Image (tube, rainbow, N blue to C red):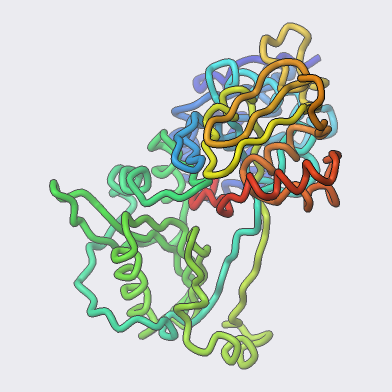
Amino acid sequence: MYKIREYDPQKDNKAVCRIWREVNWIEEDGQEKYLDIFLSEGRGLVAEYEGSAECHVSSKSGVLRYLKEDLKLSIVSSVTTSRTARKQGLAKKLTAKLIAADAEAGALVSTLGIFEQGFYNLFGYGTGPYEHWLTFDPADIINKQKVRPPKRLTKDDWQIIHTSMLNRHRRHGAVSILPACFVQSDIAWSKDGFGLGYTDGEQGELTHFFWATNKGEYGPTTIHFMAYQNMQQFNELMAVIKTLGDQIRLLKMREPAGIQIQDLIRNPFRKRIVSEKSKFEHLNRGTAYWQMRICDLAACIAATHLNSKQIKFNLELSDPIEDLLDTDSKWRGCSGKYTITLGPESYAKQGYEEGLALLSTDIGAFTRLWMGVRPASGLSATENFVGPTDLLEELDEVLCLPDPHPDWDY
């Protein structure tokens, strides 16, 4: 009934625009041209019915920072289904096929943002940690740094903004989205968007900046992108944000990896109590809205260099995506029986080694363990994650990693 094929921009543009309007991802006239830009790079698949695309999925290439290693990453950037094609299993089929195609092309890890927890677990994804979004009065920022006049950034500066994001300070779990079209379309879609930053590079490159949107005379103002290369630059950006407090009464931002924003806010608890249930309420909300999965177990384990003792165990790994793939798919997920060695040098080998403890789990839970989202002991309480107590304790000790944060929404 449905024909699955690659996205054809000439043939499918109008149909995909219609789908995006039906799901309210684009609303105003003129936004379609930015969808063309968004889809100009990366992989896309559609399910066609009676000559029209009714389901569309796309991905972008990226890089994942794992401790000090850079791993090839696939970012599933959109999954959309028209109103007439719901409950046909098309999103499942297309997404599984997209993940497999990117894995066959060399992606070691896949990631995506989720609309709800549960659906993408069917593809082997595991949930990341909480991302903290804080709202506060920018005038309450504790920062006495003298502010240099920042450079004004507009939507036309998408190229230098993208380059600055790629060159930003990256911690464990940081994601870099390689196609510049992602930033170009993202900031073009933003309503009342503006940017401020500094071009302190040797050749005048944009070294640190933020991009925000504003609603109303007094806000709230939301920061969507922030990039800096060191902590001095971060503090300078916070000083610039503080100057917005002359007019803006509420600012919303995601807490950067490795930084506790509450440290920089004057009287945070007092302001939360005073502003409760108001238009300018101060809050700190944590939401886990992205997921990841390993696509190449051997390569990901080989890139794991831990400052710890070495441990070895057998791993029985299941991968639900195998049931969603066509029988002719070359990549079939990561299910199997392995011997895993973790330490300064790490390895994954096919088959069991006699005498070792056995860990039984699925790829989503194992990805969460590998990324440092939750310790083995915690996963044993909430996931399909079964092993001897001694092994779980050893895994807690060895895989003691920083919280992973992409620091770039997708």
